[in-house]
Amino acid sequence: MANFETVRELALGLPEVEEATSYGTPAFKVRRKLVARLREEGVLVVRIDVSDKEFLVASQPATYFTTPHYDGYPAVLVRLSEIGRDELGRLLEAAWRYSAPARLVAAVDASRRP
Image (cartoon, rainbow, N blue to C red):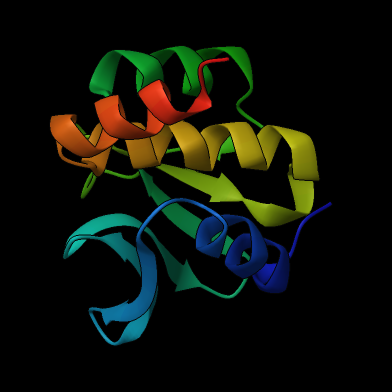
C-alpha cells in the first residue's frame, strides 16, 4: 500500500522531476510536463500511453481505473491503497519516460549503460 509521501519520494527520485501543482493539487513534472498529480485523497493521476492504460485497467481494475473525463486521454487513475511501492515505482518511471523529452530519456539511458 502506497501513500502520497511514497509517490513524492519515488517521483522526486526521477531525473529532473520537480514538485509543482496542477489544477490546484500537488503534482510532479519533468520540464513543465505532467508526470503525475494527486486527484483526490488516495487517488493519483498518472500520465501513460493510452494502450498501456487500457491494459492496466482491464488487468487490474482494483488498482487502476478511469472516469469519463479521462476516457481517451493518456492518463490512468491509481488507487494508492491498492498499489505496492515497487509497482508504483515502475509506473512512475513509465510516466516519466512518456512525459520527458526524448533527448533527456536517451541521455539518462546512455548514462546508465555500463
